[in-house]
Image 1 (spheres, rainbow, N blue to C red):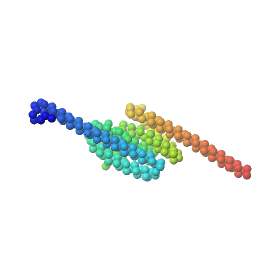
Image 2: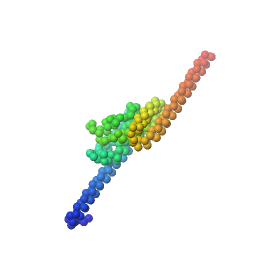
Image 3: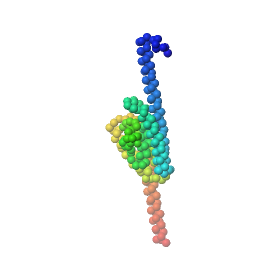
Image 4: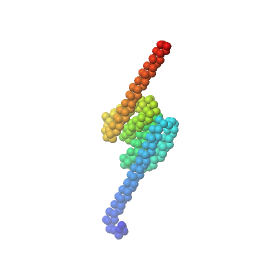
Length: 244
C-alpha cells in the first residue's frame, strides 16, 4: 500500500475513509459470525435437552430432569456469551442471527414445562428461565415465543409414541388435550396477526394432533372391547357355577 505521507491530502482522505469502512465491515461480519456460531451451539444443546427429556418413558423423571438441568446450565453459559454480543442497538441489528437458537431453546423448555406441569410455558416463565440475577440475558420477542412453542407438537407426538409403547394411556389423553388447546391458541393468534413462519408450522401441528386423536380413539375402542370380553367371561363363569 502506498505510504500515506506521500499522498495528496484529498487522496489521503479518501484512503483513510475507505480504510475505516473496511474495518467497520470486518468488525460487523466478525460479530455476525460469532452470533451465528453461538446460536447454532444453543440450538444443538437445546436439541440434546429435548432428547434427554424424551427418555422420560424409559428412565425415572428425577434422572431425566437432573440430566436436563445439567444441559440447561451449559445453555445458559452460551446465552451469557451471546448476551455480550447483543448490547444496545446490536440486539435489534443481529436479532435475525440469534433467533434460531432462541426459538429452539423455547421449544426445549416448553417440552420440559409440559412434562412437569401439563401446561404451556408462558412468556414470563421463559424470561425467568433465561435470566441471571433477575435480568434476561437476551431479548425474546413475541414472535420468538410463538414460533418456539409452535414447534412443540412434534416433540409431544414423539413423547406420546413412547408412552404408548409403555402402555401409559393417561399420557396419550394429556397430550391430546394439550395439543387441542395449543391449536386453539395459535389459531386465535393467526386470526388477528400475520406471522408467515407460524402458518408454515401448522401442518405439523395438525398432523400430530390427528395422529394422537386416532391413537386415543383406537385405544378407547380397544379398552371397550376388552371390557366387554371381561364382562362376558365373568357372566360365563357365573353361569357355569350356577349350572354346577
